[in-house]
Length: 303
Image (cartoon, rainbow, N blue to C red; front, side, top):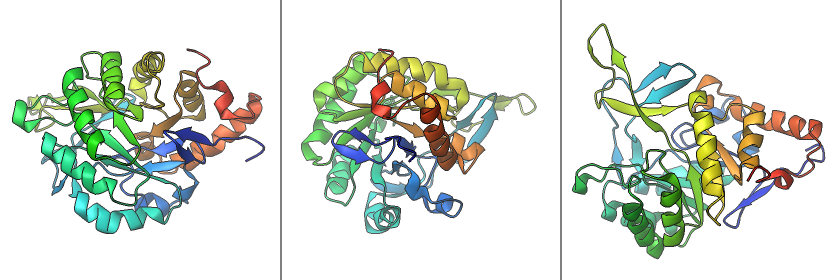
């Protein structure tokens, strides 16, 4: 690519470039592959999986906000077993790094699902700890560092694949959370997931979403996400994959300069389904313009 080296490594896994399609925004890749060759991306993180298939939330699921969007999809997915039987082969056709994103609503869900995926043909497991713990009052596993540490520790015991833990920005302390996950055995960290937010329909005089609160993503969260990635990169030794409001090649370089090994792009895929290819092409041109021969050269220059 015009003498620019974009290849990166995350937890021993080689990516042809640092652009990864974020979970929950790209399905399993098929729909986007009808528009462009998604094999050009460094990797794809699958639709968020749960042990058993889910229909997702009822009512409005997506709501546009200024410079972003809110979603309350509710992890609609076919379940881990169906993904192993059909989804993996589907994603393998693209030829990039296959990341299985998995959440759970109990410790048993996490352990069983991770064990099944560990024996499957995936390259990396991305553990979503933003799910509510239904057996402990509904608080997300990713809020308190000690709870997250226990989940990662137990999953690590059954996971033979590189383990990346996806952190919630709603954690009590994002750096403490990152350190707890690292100590418990995470090979890498990805952050940030969506921010808890709310919208009200003033005409109906009630919340827009049935669950009242929803996840905020998009360009509006980028400065906060960038700060959190920078803070975590200053304090952990494991590689970090940054995300949160990345819309341009310039955004990609900002996250890498803040210390990220790679990035995930999410909401921008809804704004422009061709975004992955466009950002990748622009990144090559931007690196040439800025005299960057190897993207790894500029990693963490702002730490």
